Image (tube, rainbow, N blue to C red; front, side):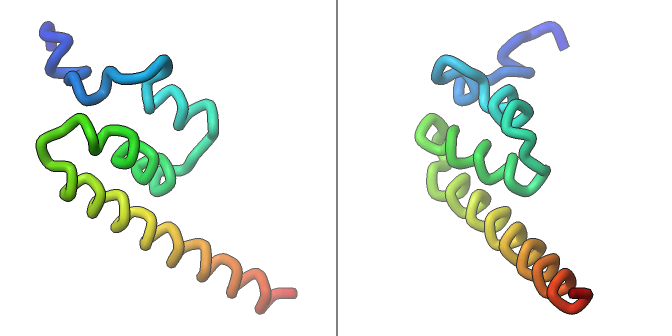
Length: 77
């Protein structure tokens, strides 16, 4: 892809650090990283509510995964 806008659209270019760099620095997993991604960019896209719903879906899944992990850990204690 030659066009930078295809790879890094305008809604990815706000702030002093790119969201994916923050996700890597924080060592977030896939689910948590997507929550952060959608929350950081929702104001800059035409589909604000859609991105907030996507963030919520990833957060709900992360909560489910973490809850199951805690339950499994407690069973083996």
